[in-house]
Image (tube, rainbow, N blue to C red; front, side, top):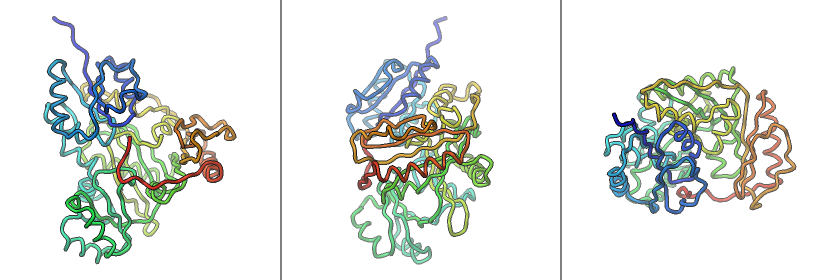
Amino acid sequence: MPPERPLTILCISSYEKGQEFLREAKKENCRVLLLTLEKLRNADWPSEAIDEMFYTPEDLPTPDIIRAVSFMARTQPIDRIVALDEFDMENVAALREHLRIPGMGLTTMRYFRDKLAMRGRAQESGIPVPEFVHVLNYENLKSFMARVKPPWLLKPRSQASGIGMKKIQEPAELWPWLDQLGDQQSFFLLEQFVSGDVYHVDSIVSERKVVFAEAHGYGKPPLEVSHQGGIFTSQTLSRASAESKALLKINRELIEALGFVRGVTHAEFLRAHEDGKIYFIEIAARVGGAYISDVIEAATGINLWREWARIEVAGGKTPYVLPDTRRDYAGVVISLARQDNPDTSAYNDPEIVLRIPKHHHAGFVLRSPKQQRITELLDSYARRFHQDFYATQPVPDKPSA
């Protein structure tokens, strides 16, 4: 008998990320392929973990990507395809369906990419969501604005990090924006703006069961930071708190309702100031950005990229076992900086476990056995960052690598 060949996993990413996924897949004895953009050819990819790399120009249409990967498959089998970034999910789902490769297809993918689809499904399952309407029928829009008090958010159905969102205070403000959108209007929804505290829950899911989840609270809501400026912070919630338990419960219910089988998720929720109720905001089938994975690893020892790779390689055929976890607390503070390479040497608390190495940014990941210590440091650093580093810039209309 010929020797059994290694599992071949094709990773697709339009951004420089997922290095630990690639390393872990290679450690699991996979043949690892990476398809990325030509402009990222010389990015910091772990070449020792990648068997072969392929490159495409930016904005390559999905049919061309399908043809390119199909050509690649003539000379080597492909067993798994993984989108390392949210913006590659549609292409990867289309590839899986075209090549008949196991994994999330186009229908389920929409629940983790399309804000309209995920809200509709959550609402059908009894999970509270802010009032919303598809930007499609004008009479329905007028009825919505007459019934639901402003302000409202005009949101792209398939964007992230507040990109492309507009806050609408009255009906007269909406119509000029729709005129600008033209034929793109149906790719948006209009949603009631609910003031509240914003949280995220990051999970590992194996065979439809949430096997790991951590609840965190943002300082300022990310939408406020991206549109109005400010210091970004997030930290582990007290695991004994009622809000943490409530968030973990609604997160489990949501993942079950959306039919997620295996992998990692990053979900955002809001606790309304007005009624105290927790509302679902959005969910993605990916590792959270803004160094959230580093926060989780600092607090628990669990690296979401590595565990995601292990689950993908197993493919449900062998049981997934979560490694032992710590129960420390962690947080992150990040600011856009005036300086190209800001000097953070004056910040020397022993709780700093990572200094964020990014041009025109200052930031740290912190760890402590006590949640209160993390809160104190984040509050202190946010005030100091305003004086030492803080800068602001307009939110982009579309993402950039």
